[in-house]
Image 1 (tube, rainbow, N blue to C red):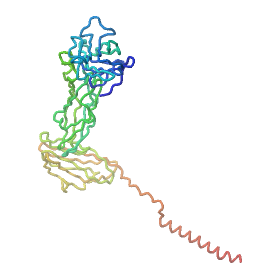
Image 2 (image 1 turned 45 degrees about the vertical axis):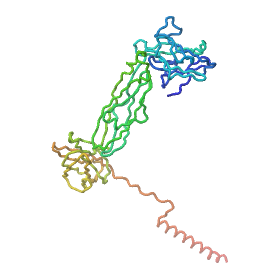
Image 3 (image 1 turned 120 degrees about the horizontal axis):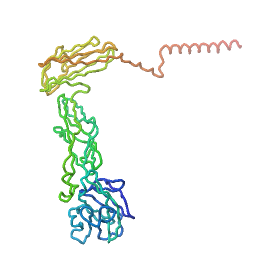
Length: 438
């Protein structure tokens, strides 16, 4: 709950107005009270407070001559009564919530609700006045907007949310996006999101189950995956919004409780779960058993590069696998689950683990694509899958930089010769030069 700042004041008295536990709402800086909904009206900095206080609310700018439940309400605080918090009007029973009212040293809080007798028109509002009277003296007077309660619910952002998880492993995966829900009405909404059989596997981080009036909430999904075989899982979802009875006057008083508590339901982004190896394509060979084949459609290699390329079969089923390459790829070795073998390979798969076919290949020439074709034969026929290899120039091997301070042997020899020559010349000068001078 936000701590409200004082709104409008007469002299030193300030007032805070909001739905219980919610943010204050304004209409062009004028406080808003929503009909049929509980609000706290807190007056602060009330000096010379006596033991009695009266809160009055009425339609318009002056007290109406003909007072009734559509235009005039009064409540009082009188500690001399068995029940100190009471409505004054006979038609106002059930419009004050004693448990949320409070008298304190320099102020008072009323928790009241004005029944919804407004016209059934969307966004309808009326100007009302509120007054606080102490010892028959009005210490505060201010206008507010009395609004028709409205309930609005919408989604924004994308239509799909994706997860990627590794096969046959339990892991946490964060969604590629998030669910954004908007409360477009003037009452708080309680939210529940339903993805059916995935509900027990999903958690929502940094999210609340309630959206305040005229606000939005991002729901960040985290998937706690099971040990799934490779497959693609898709699940639609819905979000349900309703107003808690905690905020509403009793049904026989509020005039609007039934319609507000009726749930709103809308579709939320569909979840797509990719269970498989990163950058691999999954093809289902048998929809009944989930027998599937995974391979990469495109990779890049350098001329002369050697690499291990994997393909996977999983799910209940059996197949015979063969491989062909074009003239820009050399097939160096074939293994099945780590054991060297030859084509064709017979593969019997189950839901418990993957069968791995590994090819050790070498790319030959740049600027020409390499092609690897997998032929997978099952009882239902033969399907062909292709991996295209973009072969680029040879990898550049950087020469090691020369180490500062290290001199080559040739340079050392030259330097040594120069030193010897200089020494010989100096010796001749010192010996023979002196003799000539004598």
